[in-house]
Length: 289
Image (cartoon, rainbow, N blue to C red; front, side, top):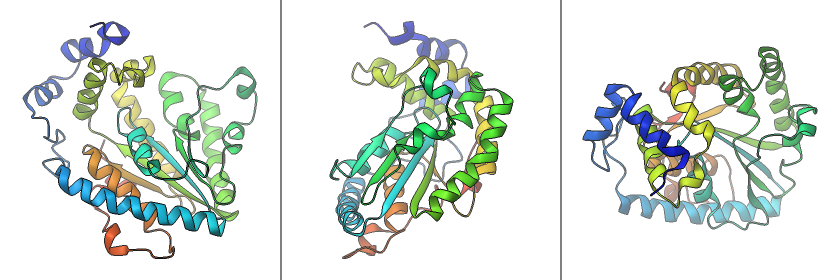
């Protein structure tokens, strides 16, 4: 089988990855958590996950009905390291919702025209109208993390972004948009394990890009950019929710719980939603580099 990018991910694993990362991947069972600092040693059991997942899906449908009837506007930003599970979490949230009023926005790189516009301009047109839930699969925070790591923006452009992002998000909140900012973080060994799996799976190879491959060598640069971004853009109006996603199942459930616990909608079943696991879901203080 031909591997994407001429097997560059496998080559990185064999020749460039730190020895402790290679050892962790080679010695792990499928359900093992690879990050030693992760507070759970194994993935959430499938039966428990599916039971909780069904309950949360029912609550999300109730929430959407109330959002539509009340004209509430919800925007969710999903950011994170490569292979942290952003797309999977978004897909699970949207699974049983009406796509006419709940949709994902995943923008490609800006066109030449968009590059000449105000940086936030192309995102504004996708913000929710009354009764809508919009989920951004990556967002304006590209300028905080990805762009500087790869040299796609200047230092001044990034500084300009940080001068504007907090006032921009404060205006969204003041106008009544409920903004959720999720940062999904995954350990280095787990990230590489997932990317190796994608490389070998014809149904998932489309998820890989040249940026993902090149990013494998830029872990430390990403770490620096992430730390600064979380610190400088975590505000009262628009706080970050960090979710450690070494276990995708726990990550998905807790993202749903954060949203559901934030609203009082008719027939809300708080017991069915369940508590947020604060050992893996909280503010920037739980982020693990």
